[in-house]
Image (cartoon, rainbow, N blue to C red; front, top):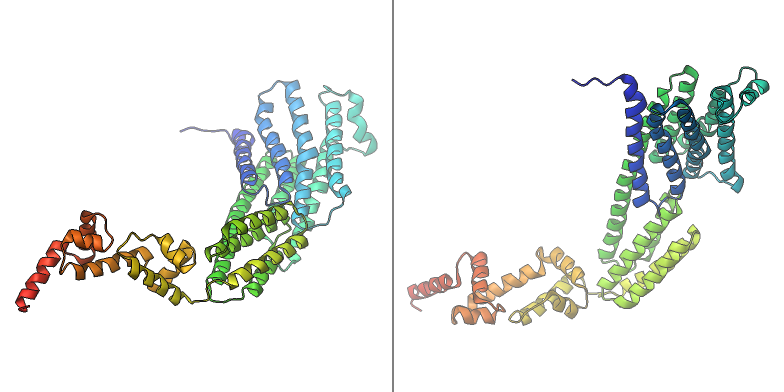
Length: 452
C-alpha cells in the first residue's frame, strides 16, 4: 500500500487539486458567463493570481534557497496586490454596493503597498537578497515587536475578513438573498481566517486548507448558477410559450408583467438582464413568424433591436425598448388567425381530404391555412392527439379499403397517393394487419357468403 506523507498532501497535493478546480471554474466563467456577469474580469484576476500562488508553492519547495525566497516574494506580491483586491471588489459588486472610482483603486493600492512592505521587510530581516538589513528593521522601528507577518495579517483583515463579515451580515438582513452571493462571501471569509490563523500559529498548511474550501464553495456556487440558469430559462420560455399558445388575443399586459418581473429578479447584473430580455424578444419574433408574419422583415427588425440592447448599459433604456418591441409583436400576434384551434385543424383536414391522392407536404397544408409548419403540427397534435402525417396515412388507408373493393393493388396505391405499391402494401398491413391482397380476398369471401 502506498503511504503518502501528510506534509506532501497538505503542501503539495491539496494546492495542485485546488488550482485545477479553480481553473475549471475560470473556464466556466469564460465560456458560459463571460457576457452575463459584470464582475467576470475581477473573478478572472483573482482566480489566475490565486492559481499562480498555489501552483508556485511546490516549485518553491524544490528550488534553491535564493530562488525559493524570490518565489515566495512573487507569490505573496501577486496574491495581495491583484488577487485579494479583485475578490473584494467583485464581492462589493455582487452585493450592489455603490462604488466610486476611488473605491476601485483603493483596495489595489492597499494590497500593493502591503505586498511591497512585506517583501522589503522580510527580505531585509531574513535573506537580504534584494534589500539590506536596515530595511528589515522598518516595522520594529515604527511599531514595537512588529514583523513582516503582521503586514499580511493586517492587509488580509482589511481587504478580506472584515469586508466579508460586513457583507454577509448585510446579505442576511435582506429579505431576498442570493445563495450564490453568500457562498462567495463565506469562501472569502474562510480564506481570510485560514490565512490569519495559519500565520499566527505557524500552521501554514491552513492557508492551503482554506483555499481548498474556497474552491469547493466556488464549485458549489457554479453548480447553483447552472441550475438557476436552466430553471430561469426554462420557466421564462415556458411561461411565454403558454401565453402565445393561448387563445388570448391581447398579450401585451402579460408580456409587460413578464418584463417587469425580470427587472425585479435581475441580480445586480446588466448583462444577465439583457440576455433574458433578448430571450423574450427572440421567442416573440419567432412566434410571430410562425403565425404568418413577414419573416424577412421581422428578423431584420429583431436583429437591429437586439444589437441596440447589446450595446446599451442602461437598464431603463433596455426595458423601454423591450416594451416597445413587445407591444408591436403582440399587436401582430393579436392579428393571427382568429379561427380557433379546432377550426384550424378542420381546415387542415379539409385540405388533406381533397388532396390525399397527390403528394401532400406539411408545408402545403400549413400554407393553405396561413400558419407555420411548427404551429400547425403543435395545434393538430393538441386537438387530434396525433400528428398531421399520421392522420394523412390513416386517412389514405381508410380510402384504400374502399377502392380495393373494385380496383387492383397497383391502381389503389396510385389512387391514394402512394408512388410505390410495395411501400403501400407495407403501410396497409401495418395499419390493418392484412396485406392488400388478403384484404381483397377477405372482402370477396364475405361478399360471396352474403350472396352479393
